[in-house]
Amino acid sequence: MARLSLPLLLLSLLASHCLSASEQAPPAPLDHWQEADWKGLPASIQVDKQTVLFAKHSSDNYLGLAILLPDWQRSGQLWQLTRDLGRLGFDILLLLPSPQQTELDPAAEKKQKTMDAFRQQFAERIVKLSDAKLQEGGFKLLLAQGTSAAWAANLIASEQLPAPDALVLLDGFFPNQLSNQTLAKQVAQASIPTLDLYQEEGGRWPLLAAEARKSESRRSHKLNYRPYALMELDETPARIQGWLTHLGWI
Image 1 (cartoon, rainbow, N blue to C red):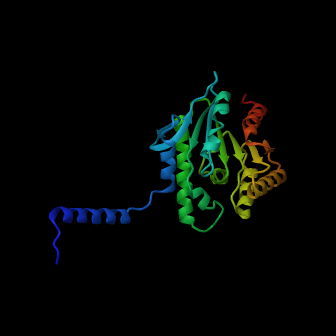
Image 2 (cartoon, rainbow, N blue to C red):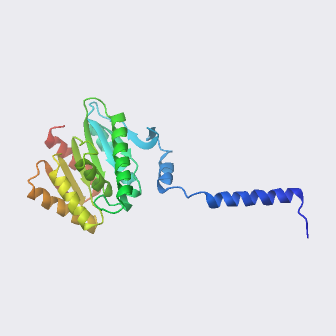
Image 3 (cartoon, rainbow, N blue to C red):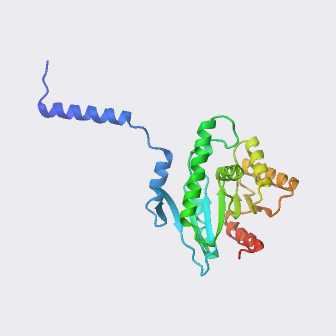
């Protein structure tokens, strides 16, 4: 039987150990790579040990804090609103989304423990981060996109998330008709002023969800509810500015 020299034996043992460690190490969660992508940007900061995107207002007057909740893999799209919101007087705080918000259905009855844990974690993140950045005397504007809109409405309705001063939905939906009906009722029953923006070419689910919200809000005679169909996403800042002027904020 051939004998291995000491250096070869050590290299063999080291390779075996590395292979065993890599087999045992769990894959990095999806949001780990998301955070890694954003960490190099000037707007990326750490708040309460979380990576967020933050920008200060660029106008002479401070209006408040705009909290952006993007849909999964849509952070860059929503962050494009920063310059226009900053000019209106808002500091902007973007919370990086979690893949769980698309995997878990806020209106479903299954996976209740997992869903309750995520719901609590999501609400705590919004509260802690917004409290850390909201200046005294400012308004709190919550802008939620896609599945984040479904979760935000659910958290506000269940009183796990304190209601903001105003709510903007952007293509709010969940890919389930029952869930969209639940979202519609929660939006209609809330007393928060709500701007409901959706793209005319936004796809089947967002359009169905928007129609359900409009119907339910008319049925409930919801006050301060304004739905608006966008031809282009670039219209969003102008629609928000016009709506805030109507509310008397600017």
